Structure formats: C-alpha cells, structure tokens
Amino acid sequence: MPKKNILILGGGMIVHDQILPSLYHLQRMGEISKISVCARHTTPLKFLQESPTIKEAFPEQMFESFPPLDTPEDKYYPELYKEAIKTLSPRQCVFIALPDHLHYPAIMEALDHEQHVICVKPLVQTYKQLVEIEKIAKEKRLFVGIEYHKRFDIRSLLARKNYQKGLFGEFIIGEAKMIEPYYYRQSNFQNWFTCDISDPFTYVGCHYVDLVTFITGLRPVSVSVVGIKRTFPNGNEGYLWSHGRVTYENGGILSVINGLGYPDIGGGSNQQGLELYFESENSTTTLKHDDQFRGVSYSIKEEMTEHKKKFYTINTDYFRLVPWNGPGLKPVGYGYTSIEELIRCVEGIDS
Image (cartoon, rainbow, N blue to C red; front, top):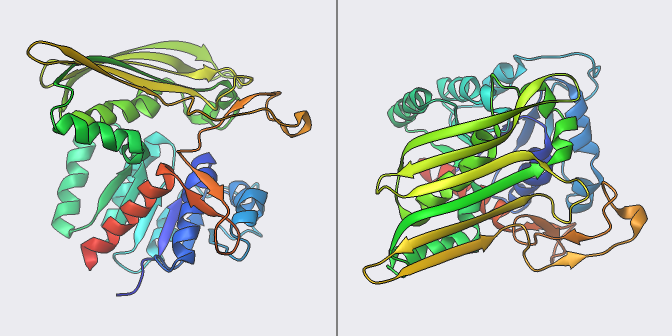
C-alpha cells in the first residue's frame, strides 16, 4: 500500500522542535511519503525551511509550503488550511499543531475531506466537540489521535505496568506541576492565549491529567480550576497561572499547578513533575517523577547560551537529534516515539 502524505497545519515551536524532525526521519526511513506545511503566512515557514538545526539533521529534505515561500510575508491567509486539505487524496493524514481554539474547525475540515487526524493536545475545548468528532471518525473509519508524548516516556510505561500488576495499590491523591518558561509571554502566545480562549491548565495541565489515567486506568469525573490573570507585553490579558483539582472515578484527587513563568535564567527548560500516593489494605506507597532534572547538567561557553543562562539541566529523554549511521542526525526520545507510533496507527487503519 502507498505510504501516507502528511499535511502539517501550523508552523510554530512544536513543529520546529518535534513534529517536523520526527516526520522528516520517518520520511527518510520510507515510512511516509510527501510532507507539506501550511501556515497563515510565510514567516514561520521560512524559519522552518532555513533552520540550522533542521538543516544539520536533514540536509537533503524539504517540505511543500502553503503559501509558497516566495509569497510576501505581510500577506495573511487564515483560511488557507482548507485549500491545503483539499489537495490531499482521501485517507492521507493531517497533523494539527495550531493554537487550542483552532483545533476543532481544522479537525472537522479534515474529517469532512476523509483525512486521518493527529493533533497536539488538547484535542478540543469541549466534551460536546469530542463526542461529535468521535462519531464522525468511527462512521468514516478514520483515525483521530492526540499527541500525548508523555505516555511514551519509559518512566510512564513502567508506572503503568507496575500499577496494573498491583505493586502500588489504589491511587488516592497526588500533585503535578508544569510551569512553562517566562519567555512564552513575549511569543505568539500573547496573541491568542487570552482569558476567553485558554489557560495553563487546559494547555499543559492536561498532560498530567491524561497521564494519571494512562497509569491507573481511572477516568476523571470532575474538575475545578482557578486562574490568575496577568497582562502580556502587548496589553492582552491572560490566565498566566492556574491551579486545578481533578477527581477521578474512585474518589482519588490530583492537584495540578501550571503557569507561564519558569525563570528564563533557570537551569531547565521548564519545571515539571508528578507525585502520587496509593493505599493498600495495610500500607501506603508512592511514585515520584522529577520530569525537570533527568540527571544531566551542562555548563557551556557563555557566548553560546540562551536567555543569559550559564548552567543547564538537559532532558535527554524527551527529544534530541543525535549522530547515527546515516546522513545528518536522527531524532530519539519519547517525543519521536509518540509520533512514530501515531503514524503507525494511521497506517494500520488502512492496511
């Protein structure tokens, strides 16, 4: 069977750091066919095409651009994704990496044109939208997958196995945190991450809500969230800190702290981790994942540092481009594995 063509919607940070390099490697290995990227204007597309990081890893590969790269950067095409989807033959794959509130219309457009879908988290913003998508996908036998890469972290897979074996007992209470960098406030986030659209719990807290379900098999039944408003540099107001409480079907509770405020000069790229407590008949147990410090730290030449950092803690587990027995560099880590497995699911539906 012919390999799938992949259309990426969006050209932001996650496309540069994880999605495009992963797909380029899968293309290089013969797992997928053509790759296209669609954005509202050419600025992010030119950044991707000219990225030294991507060029070093994939010196011979390029993507088709919507709009074409020679289009003036001040020309905006907010509905271009619809035209890009129409160029695909049926049952290819649309990889959605757009701001949260744009997921639903893009997913529906892809499904309407008989396309499989992979989407960054969160899939959509309401349960009603989720039910609608599920119904259509099942009727058309189309795959819809969410790129929850933390599920493919080895520590998460081990925790899932050990919980299912009964090594921990029953989940009772826990806490999680993910604080993204302060510099996000100067990025495109200030244009869309406003109070009427999203919040840190919805944007990144969902990682750990999902992970507790993945580990324990327990489904959430209620959620409450409190947000703290702050102002972006452009004057827009957003919830830049949040605290969520999630209750699971057995009565277990997860507390989740999120924000856009990890210090730019901090050693890590963000602050994140998970700690859970469990009960058995005559004992309690615990699980603790420090997802920020993974045992590797660097002090590098000052002129090569970012955000005035002089000391780094390196996450070697999520996504790295490393030497291999082939051209350029290859992606490794659970960020790559997640995309590889999702693409295999797409292929499996039509095999």
